[in-house]
Each structure stands twice: as C-alpha cells, then as structure tokens.
Amino acid sequence: MDPNFTIVSALAVEGARVLATGDAAAMLALADTDSVVEDLDGQMMLPGLIDSHLHPDQASVSEFDHPIPAMLTVTDVMDYVRSRAQVLPEGEWIWVRTVLTPRLRERRYPTRAELDQAAPRHPVIFAPYIYYPKASLNSLALERLGIDREFESETPADIERDPTTGEPTGLVRNHTRYVDDPGEVDRTNDSERVEAVRNLMGIYNSVGLTTVSDRKATPISIKVYEELAAQDALTARLSLMHLLDTSPGRDVEEIVADILALGQLREQINHPMLDLIGVKTFIDGGITSGTAYMLEPWGESDRFAILDPLYRGNLVLSGDRLERLIRASANAGLQFTGHVVGDAAITELVRAYGAVIRETPIRHLRPSLTHANFIPEQVIGQMAEWGIVADIQPAWLYLDSNNLLDQWDENRLRHFQPLKSLFDAGVLVAGGSDHWHRLDSHSATNPFNPFLGMWITLKRVPRYVDRAVNEDQVLTREQALRLYTTNGAYLLFREEQVGSLEPGKYADMIVVDRDILESNLDDIRDTRVLRTYVNGELVYDAGSEQ
Image (cartoon, rainbow, N blue to C red; front, side, top):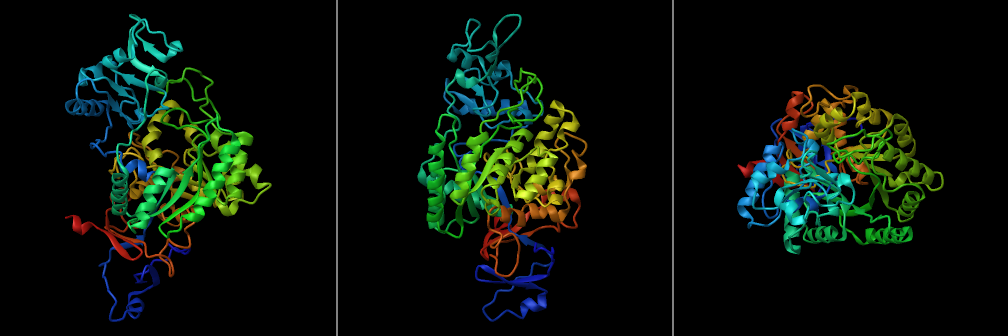
C-alpha cells in the first residue's frame, strides 16, 4: 500500500516495526540465528485495516446484560419482545432500541396490536432513538401514560388516532414529551466497562482492524481507554475525537473554553496506542430518522412522520457560532469535524471552513466532514482546494438506499456517497462504520466488517435492490483498500506510523484467506482474517478458535 501500490513477496520485521520489504531471498538474507521465519504459503498479507469512525465504549456494552439478535423484520422484533417478556417480571417496561425502522424489511413501525400480542402483561415501547420522529407503544404502555381517547396532547398530531373511534393507535410523535425516555442505560461498573472494551478490541482485531477512531469520545470513555493503555492492553490504535456540548442554551464562550481545555488534555495523553486528535459536534440529523438537513424538501412521509411538505430537516449549528468553534479548535491545534449528513448541512459546514480558512490556515489540521452522505459537486471542488477530508460509512449506502429510493426519485440520490468523484478530485476520504451497537461485524446495527465495506464500494448494489445506485461511482480494488488503509491513516494523523507496510512503520499487518485483488467480486465481502499482528506481535489467530 505504498504510493506505487507495490506488491512484494516478503517482508522483515524488527521489533515493532517493518525493517524491509522485497523478494524472499533478500528478506531471508537479513535473518540471523534469532530470527523467526514464517511462510504464509502464498496467502495475502495486507496492512492492518483502519476504521475511521466508531464508538467502542458504547458498542462494547450494548449486549452487556443480554444478547440482542439481528432484527430485519417486524416478526423478528416481535420474537425479541416475546423473549424479553419471558425473562422480565410482569409489569416491567420492555424497551426496543436500536432497530432503525426504515431498515426493517417492511419499513414500518410495529402496531399496537402486534406489541400487545407479543407482551400483553408488559408495557412495551419501540423507540429506536430518543430523537426519532415517533415511537410505537402497546396498550399497557399507553395506559401507564394515561394516553386514551380523551387525552389532550401538546399538538394534535402527536398522538395518532383511529379516525373512526378516536382511540390511540399506539404511534406517538415526539414521544419524549409524554414518556421519560432515559436513552440507552449503561449498567456496567468501571472494571466491567474496561473489560468490555478490551473484548471489543479483540473482536475488531478478528476482522482485521488495527487502528480505530472513537468519533464521540467523552470523559468516561477516555478514562476507560487510558486504563487499557496503562495496562498495555489496547490491541488496536485508538484516535479520539471529543464530543462537544453545543446545546443551544450554552454560551459560545463556554464551548470555546471546553475546546481550549481539550487542547491541553491532548498534550497529557502520551501513549503510542492512544491519542486525542480533535473535537466533534452535530450540524444536522440523519437519513434513517428523516432529520438530515437537505437543500430540497424531504417530502411528506408517514414513515418519517413528516407532515410539512416544505420540511428540509434539522440544522442545529451554523453561522457565526459554528465559525467561532472552528477557529477555537484551530487555536487549540485540534481537528474539527461535524456530523453532516444532508447536502445543505455539508454545504454549511464547508462554507464555515472556507470563512475560517480565509483568515487562519487550517489545512494541516485536516478539517473534516463526518458521514458526508450527500455531497454536491461544487462542494467536492472546495474540499479539494481547502484540504477538507471526510469519513464515510459505505454500509449506509447498502442498508438505506432502498428506503431513500422509495422516498425520493433516483436523480435525488446522484450525490449519495460520490466516492469516485472524491478520489478523482484528490479529496481524502476514509472508510468508517459508525459501529455503536451489537458485536457481530456483519449484522451490527451499523456493520463494522471492513471487507463488507470494501465490497459495497465496489458494487454499490443496496440490500433489497436489484441494481447499482450510481454505478459510475464504484471504486477500483486499490481505491477500496486505500479507503481502509492509507486514507484512514492520514485522516487520523497516523500516516507516518501505519496504513502501509513500509520500512520504519509499525508492523500492523493481517493475513487473509483470499487474494482480494483477484478473487470473485462477491467473495470479497466474506473475506476471513486468519491472523492479525499489531507492533509485530500476534494479537489474533483464527486457528486458535477452532
């Protein structure tokens, strides 16, 4: 994965770093009596892979108290509710989290009757996120909340009712107005949390990941990571983007003070496996909740609870306030990234970067877009000119395109993850997963298997769709590899350390069971990692699991 995409037959490792690469005879000539020689028998070795965006602390405890199955259909959801009803005391709430309604095969919420049938003696609430447009409740849950035919909601549209009887159907918009939604509750103690992250790092190693980035780190998660680093127990390099509290009620000077303090914290974290590189905030919402901020209206939608035909999504940070935070980050020497999904949100963040760049050089800090799903053509040119980078989640194209094609026409999706255009323009884009729930690499709420991600960029054929979406944006196999190696290393300021197997870099490397440059295209998604090395040390061996 050097700039020339060189393929060699052998390499030598000394200590934690690559010593040399070349042909087998030249490498064997470097060996001495203490050297260990390993013959891979023709198997492919690659640099350790990099995920530019995930949430290890949150994901690691997501199945702490019980395993959560993959739920692809409403039937799957009902089976899960029944299983929880069998183990929870009668009358205890059953919360169904992290099932993104547009990703269900039926693309609908469970009905009140379905939830009643699955758990008649438990109040049940199907609420994917706190900020999701609506939730689905069963009869006992509605009774507990006092929501009946006479109930007066804050706005008439909040409580969906049967047009004939006036009875609530169970669908509640803005559900947090009526039920105290605690969000996902972490029930672990400090030692359990440390062990959970240690376990997750091993899972990441098993799919070839040797460098990852927590793009929403908090003081609690940093404490966990520092404990693992102190124990020399991190088996994947970890770069952190600290979450900023940019709530509308906070004075901007308070947020600036937070940024400056994080600049000081960055200097205090001194470990080769752990670093703090920047800050993150939210600019808009998402595509599965119908809240991404778009240049054109979303259009009315029952699925997304959109009643206003002119609604364009949610813009939560913009203008001078946004520019001041970018300047403060630059003054603190921190990378800035914004969660931007819709094309209007992306346009606003890039505009703000441009306003700052005219006064303060920030190219060296690699100003970033997080997610960046809908990138207008003119924005790509600005990104190239100003050195703006992006971390993109290919799995979203796979999982969400069928729903978006139903909401909009195909022309509206022409700028959905325009990866080839970004590569062609010289924009640095890295591959991430946004992993945050469930531990299976292929069926997690956001899958984190990098070979699945590569396959998606090479095919662009979404789930439940029989054709490619913007086939002109498919990547080459080399580009797909770079998405998860050299590009990720650059985005995380680790290009001098990892991302390629070159002399002087850390010996982070993996052995896989097929040649992904020559294998059948559809076989790439099923690539298995046989061995993973970090700093030249074996951290995962598939053979030991058999």
